[in-house]
Amino acid sequence: MKINISIQQFMKFVLAGILNTSFTYGIYYLLIFIIDYRLSYIISFLSGIILSFILHAKMVFKVKIDLYKIIMYPLVYLTQFSISFIFITLFVENGIVNKKIAPLLVLLITIPITFVISKLILTNRNKNA
Image 1 (cartoon, rainbow, N blue to C red):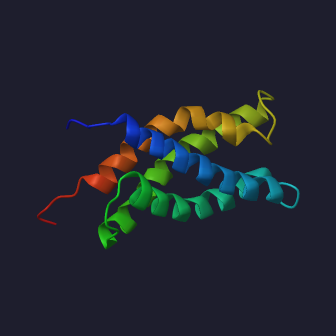
Image 2: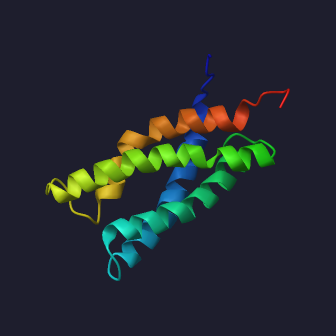
């Protein structure tokens, strides 16, 4: 399957990501002073899925929100979460990076993956479904 990636669309994706990351990182940063960094990450990550879905559907890909997309979209973030959680734990537990900035470093790994999967789910739907 060929994926048509426009520069403008990717730039909107990055902007939406900056907004979402600012929101979720703020939650994460506040929570690490109260609870374990891993639980803080889980909570902030889950709250970011909702904001991300809205931003990507309306601002980036300009698609109508429907039940199929609502159900399928979390798969994007299940993939991203799995990759991120492994790398955050690896980086923090091995002293590679401070727990306060670990989620930001991991974004370099997950952004391209997330863009492609988001585009596939939000813009390609089986017309017979």
